[in-house]
Amino acid sequence: MPRNRTGDRASEAPGAELAARTRNKNGRLRLLLTLPVLAFLASCSGSGPQSALEPKGPIARDIDGLWDLVYWLAVAVFIMVTALLVWAMWRYRERPGDETEPKQLHGSAAIELGGVVFSVVLLAIISVPTVRGLLDMRQVPEGDDVIQIQVTGHQWWWEFEYVDETGPDGATLITANELHIPEDATVYLTMTSADVIHSFWIPAVNGKRDVVPGQVTNLTIIADDPTSPDEPLPGQCAEFCGLAHADMRIKLHVHTDADYAAWLDEQFQPSQLPAEESELAAGWSTFNTVCTTCHQVSLEDVEGEVVTYGPERHIAAADIQFRSSFGPNLTHLFSRGTFGAGTVELTESHLAEWIGDPQSLKPMNPDENDLAAGRVLGMPDTGLNADEISEVIELLKTWR
Image (cartoon, rainbow, N blue to C red; front, side, top):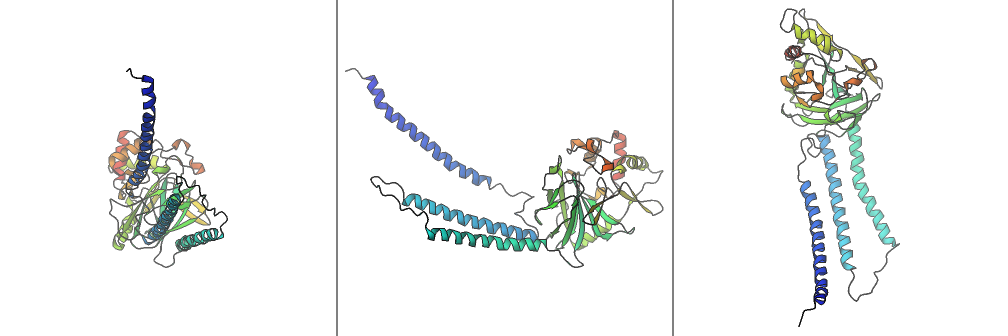
């Protein structure tokens, strides 16, 4: 008997449709299982060096402890809500032949009151340590052992003035981008901005604090242990402030008390002004002509007198005067490990590239510089040739 091809196809259609539905169902199931696995693997990448989850001081540990509290409370709530949801889905699932409608609880006083009480207790558990922590962090530290440092944010670098530390000439110590403090010391930062809003953030020692032009904000930092000279604690401007925002970094060096005192002594040793007949004289002539337009440097001449070259401006904020210049102070440039606001390792080759073509190492906008208006948006092209750059670098290498 001949086969009924139409009938065969008709009989095979339901089986094919069932197989297609099964494949689709299995595909969706695999997708649902894959997404949480990918999320879990993404969370295992590590925190990295600039992380608030690896505190290096008591204030940062308090913040991390509050984060842990909120995290575990959130985990507990997630587990409870998920368990209730799964139970309700199972308990009130549709059963063949069962037409019973679940009991409606809309307007249940017990459930509403329980939800309110639970929420109030949960928020109290979170809010009490949060408010207490904020009040503790904003408390002004007192005592003769508190180190006072004034911080000025610039587009795009940081300036630090150690207002309690003065050299033989009576001037305070000013440096840039690399902050040095002793271990376990309470350091009180008084901060303002020379241009736009910045945000000072070294996550290992405290949270973020906005740095606002015309206003003063404060932050207390304490670090536990000394850092390696090659591995300072990293920080960052955390408020978008323009073109080179991502390259406005901070390096926090933590010393023992003895090493901190030695570092201060080194910083107060004046760099030397080259004699007119020395081989560094050509580099100094170029530097004094070109670089002191923006940068300051304090040098001791042959008669032992310390003279400061370059511009000095004062930024007023809330009746406080912040000493500053248009570019970083270079008196002890080669005592630092980096330049360009902590973004470039300080080597002769990098410095030569920076002087010859600053934009190759850091995006800036020097075409908008206006010294008369106090606006500096980057290192301009100096126009120096290779020999002049080499002479300037030989000079800078002596300023340690």
